[in-house]
Length: 324
Image (tube, rainbow, N blue to C red; front, side):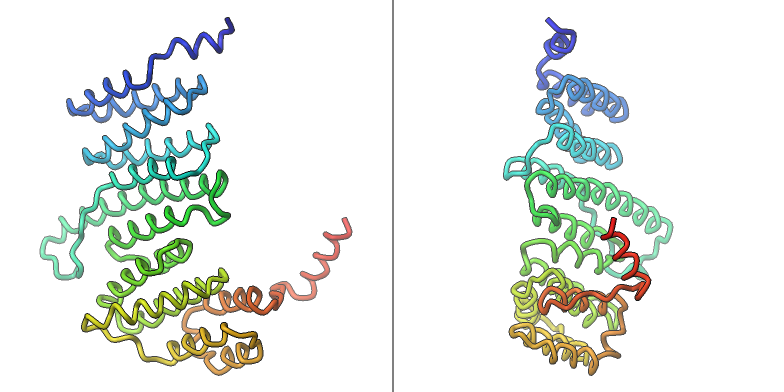
């Protein structure tokens, strides 16, 4: 019998280790358990018993997170994804559900909606620091999971469900939610209605002038990926949902531009598209990224090639590269 084969047989069933380590955590020795989870799971990985290594890491991540040990839980969660990659585990409904179980174990601790209304500044500072650690841990885990999903079965952007999880966690747990990041991940998801609910919530508490930018950013993100259907669905859903609130749909030149743009995208109307960009330039220029997204839209919908930022020299380098 080979030495490698012998090592595989020496390891006990994973469940034995899972039960032992669970007991260590329940006794309050989270740090000791963490070191054991890492060393024990590494043995199973070394023996190429990936399924059992994953069971151990999954159990450890969920237990540490539910016991409030976010740093430890996030580390095991990231190791879980690393093991998915090492074992070349395919992305499917079962593997997604297991990743989702770890995600759901990350704590949710609501912060005050208006941070300036809080009296205990020191406590608030500690709460914000803890929230940032939670977001960083969960984000690292989910971003790694998105990369794994893109490589092992999802589309090139990664799992839409994982993008939505990340968007939701960033928005719900951030002291000051970065709506740009939230939008980036929601528009790579598959639930524009859920995104609309998040946007409506944001419209109810954002600073003046941020409301129309948030909607425009979302629409342009969808369109830059060629997703006209969800861009339209999002706008209609936001309008529907705010009817039962005191929130008003933004009325600005930027929103006029978005309305006309969505109508233009329904037909092959490049001259009209270009005219809109000229007529609403001052509104579009409110956010530098808008022009870049509109260039992407022109390429996707009308076949307009992107201009090389290096101009003539860029074209020369391109020709030199093709000659090789």
